[in-house]
Image (cartoon, rainbow over the protein chains, first blue to last red):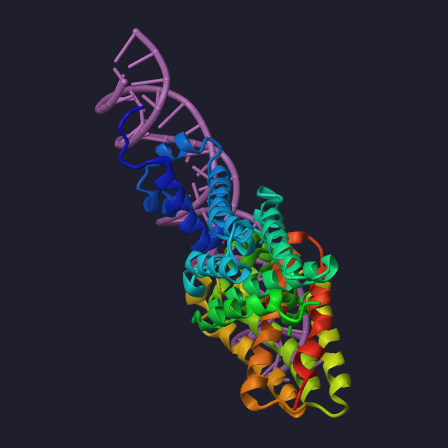
Length: 188
Length: 188
DNA sequence: ATATATATACCAACCGTTCGGTACAATAGA
DNA sequence: TCTATTGTACCGAACGGTTGGTATATATAT
């Protein structure tokens, strides 16, 4: 391997932030190039299919982070409260306390839907299933657990939208704080 | 006066749908032109400041619809259940059962934020205040009512995001159905 | 020597915008 | 009543600039 100034990993991280800030359409190659520190040609070296590949890489990048920092802790060892606490802390960090958008939201707009089919859905599903398992473990029947998980995911996504509109992350923090009671409370 | 093929009102309605489908960046002049039936240049007759004016008109258009079909019914006469029912039906219609996006979400992305400052926030605030008054009328203390209203708005926005990601409006309908109990239940 | 990586230069297509001009209806003056 | 003027509605063509993408050449590291 040759020496590299910017690793592909670094480039993907930078690119991901551009997509998260501007959405698919707003993430121009100029911005992508500038943020990653890579020239146009270098970008096409790492991402042969151009913007589409970059968006896919960004999606996978975020999916990996969610898997490692949110879903795995939820399925790991320890008390339910402790595991949920870790996952919520990770979500707070991932969305910078409510200041940054969710790729699920951004990649489900306009043409991005057709360019990246299924990405948004699979991310929502993964988180939803993990929450559902937590609720079941707390004693909820499968149907009830599924509904609670759906509400938790909705609260996260909705709070991110409202937080962005209000220009304040407070509402997102409040929503995160509600998740434990939403999933665990009043079980049979 | 010349014969009018397309009224400005019709143009605004068509333009609004383009912004709702593609977001600010994705709503190109070509698409706006095609959807409204007006030539690219003709759009500048109605909207002298171009795309920015069109986005503002779309925002006002939606704000008016929300005011007339959601907020006014909430503040009108009749039983709480009846008024809430009207508002929820209007929301279901406005978002086509969860199939279309919310401008609050789309206009709070990337550069649209700076192009249309405050629009998203004012729309969120108006709906939130209306919900809060409903909860207070049902017996909730102001602080509790405010929180319930915030949760209702979050559920609406979040369910729209999840519905779009899943390609199904079912989750949005479920969220709308939860709003009455969310605002009215378990009051002192 | 070979594969990887980056730079330079370029492309057609499209972007939002502007311009010059046309069609038409209402108004004003004779 | 007829004509001249005005103002609105709209369009085709073109503007400079940017888009996403490519081809070719050069550099670097093994």
